[in-house]
Amino acid sequence: MDSSPGEWPVSYHGTGVSASGSIAQDGYDLSKGKRFLYGHGVYSTPSVKVAAMYAQTFMHDGAEYQLVFQNCTSTEGLKVINAADNGVGEYWVQPDDKLIRPYSVCVKLISSEPPTEENGRPAADAKQSSCMIL
Image (cartoon, rainbow, N blue to C red; front, side, top):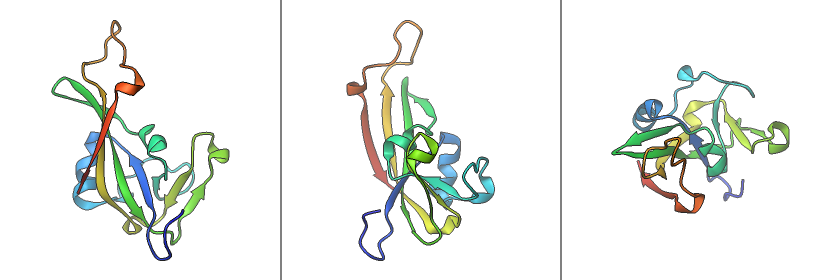
């Protein structure tokens, strides 16, 4: 966490389209959480690549996308789970859903054509991303 004193560091949260509307509208709500492997809280990560692993893909106008929320996260009460402890990447568990605030939605183009057995997914260098401030 390399933020200035008092500044909330940036984190990312991968999710599905079904949850994205309420997160964008109302913020995180722990009462809607389902998985708490490392303790009760809102899970995020300083790595957008790790967050993308938890982002469900969705189709829009024949293209496949995934979305990740970009957040400001208070360090107050924050539990850090190191990559060495989970084999995936660093996780942050914020036990107070009012101390993590989504402020941007990052959308990544996965495929410009629906994946099929014949065409598979495009090469990684063909993927595009963009973010939108909430």
